Amino acid sequence: MRLRITNGRVIDPASQLDAQHDIYINDDKIVAISEHDPDFTADKTIDASGLIICPGLVELSARLREPDQEHTATINSETHAAIKGGITALCIPPDTDPVIDTPAVVELIEDRAKKAGRAMVYTIGALTQQLDGKLLSEMVALKEAGCVGISNGLNPINNTLIQRRAMEYASTLDLTLFINASDPWLQSQGCIHEGMVSTRLGLGGIPEAAETIAIARDLLLIEQTGVSAHFHNLSTTKAVSMIREAQQQGLAVTADVSAHHLHLSEHDIGNYDSLSHVMPPLRSTRDREQLQQGLRDGVISAISSHHQPLDNDSKLGPFAETLPGISGLETLLPLTMKLVDDEELSLHQAIANLTCNPAEILGLDTGQLKVGGNADICIFNPNAHNECQPQQFVSAGKNSPFSGWLFNNEVSHTVFNGKLVFQNW
Image (cartoon, rainbow, N blue to C red):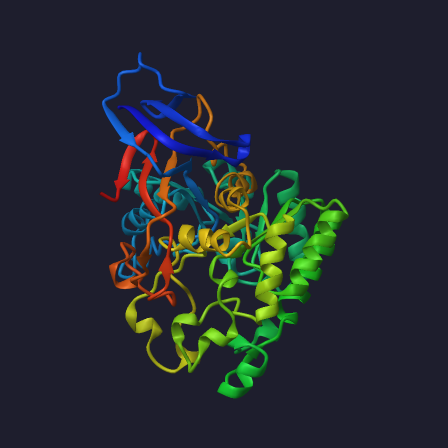
């Protein structure tokens, strides 16, 4: 297909482009970004007047529930939700069933994603076999199969020597290690941030030290082994300070934060609202403010949905017995743009945190608009006023605490591999 997108404001943080241009697409590539070209014959034209054109969003961590939990969600349903949210590339953590610790599982996921044909799905391979923290995985085979990094998912590695050996192995292969930092003993059976709210509600608390002690250990091992590492989903003030100091010392570490941690705090749990049950837990308002500051400073370089679709039953029952997680693909862009509306981030910072920055973390040649590059594009209306209604999500997971929130930004079109895969009207 020959596609032309006209009259829109083109913003590409990777190239510092911010101007009104037309974008010309032939098959799956961008062939020109320029003023009007009368010689280009398009099969389809998108009039983007009043809209913002940016690279397709890149999601660092989305659990698509396939394989094994197709009763909850599927690659097909969740990539459909992704393109509705302007996301054209997303990454699956290794804690599927079977675990992503063999090339066969990587190929299975890639095959199903290709059949869905809506967004590019990348895999993160398992750091240890079956994620049990005992035997190292075959990282060479996983890299050759296409994994963009390795991780032990939400499963901690209790043996520090094994963690060190795994980092050394990953370093020799130039594989990025993705870390969910949490000390399992300090986290224990906690389900909420340890503080005034946990005391009032009588719920088991998770201290900030559960995060910071794990980060401290890993940073020391990163320094010793030289591995490149990315910390998922920071939630505390101290963690931001520790990552900042590590970066100043020259360590190859990056970090992301979830969109919900940038807007919610422990107080949003109210009277046992299980929709606000997440891991790591929602922290204090000061933590939330410092996470926003970390984004402004560039210490945190990406915003992620950390998408976890759940069925309705998973959020019913006593708070501590419900499953943690938020369905976030369709709220990622509007929540990020709300930070712009609230003057917490500049427009260019916000878009970079959703596009070129996460792409760089994953080592992908995407998240940018360039001639000759893949035509993965998000077009959104910065003046669309709508109310968040989770029951209307395309995602199979309707578990969102943002019901009733008013958003001012909405995806109008998504182009993936040069094809218009989503249109809002």
